[in-house]
Image (cartoon, helix red, strand yellow):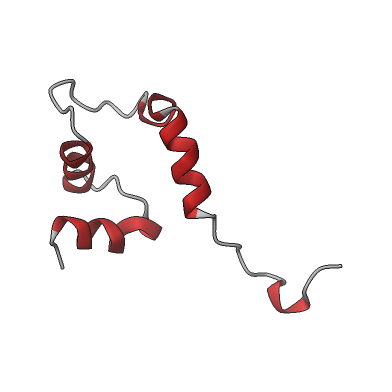
Length: 70
């Protein structure tokens, strides 16, 4: 039986589960994103994606905090 309070609400993804999936096979998520080969660290890749407006809206706050942005 569904909870009537959740009708019409989009359920938030489990970020920990998504992170674990990413860690098992990062290239599955990064392939096709046209990340320059000279970027090798997670920090460089996140910086590149943020600079190019390619961070999903739901992660913008976290990424901006991590990069010291407002």
